[in-house]
Image (cartoon, rainbow, N blue to C red):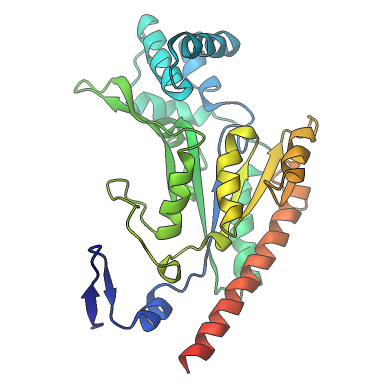
Length: 304
């Protein structure tokens, strides 16, 4: 049994931190973290699910959200969540957790997305001689209840997204968790520290050497300005980011993010093997795998 000591923060660590770090926190996990709408899926998830169910045009709904947020000074994410269940209620369309999950099966993806995760897992396993692991995450302002029903849900180690509160009848009544452009960054630190239980605070100090997934092991995928805070935090802490854009549209936005130093690369959202996105992701993965090997070898020498 390892010997532990309790630090002032209440965190428990073994007395021999180096031994424990080597044994328990190999820091050999690569985290690939995705925005969803516009990154994995061409349109916002609501446009495949709730809006068609209540018979509302997407452009009409989003204009109503913009006008309401402007008139009330409200947070746009909270505003869309409130307006969506209000309009569903007016249309007499029930919005329960199961309804939203069932609607998730209608969500569509960019080409190659459904095979992407196995493709990346296999690449990392082969390149690292099966010594490096991969985890895929979503951090989205969209609805977790919808994401729980998408066909690719099983590929994710965890999904962080906005959520509804459901009353005792099982109906959505108001937002329970809201993830905005800036609050997405909290979840990067949760992944970094290995504190993915949302009931636990991430504010206590944790030494860098004890964080199971260093930022240098992270790759963030986003599609535009709403992802800039996450891209910036990831890169400023030694991680990597990629901007994607719809294949038939201009690469201008991605190039602007690249020139501003927000991303390592940009590419069309084509997730098929051999695409620019796949090739550039593999370049980053090669670097991360090499860095993990370097840290592992250095730590092994230090222990001798």
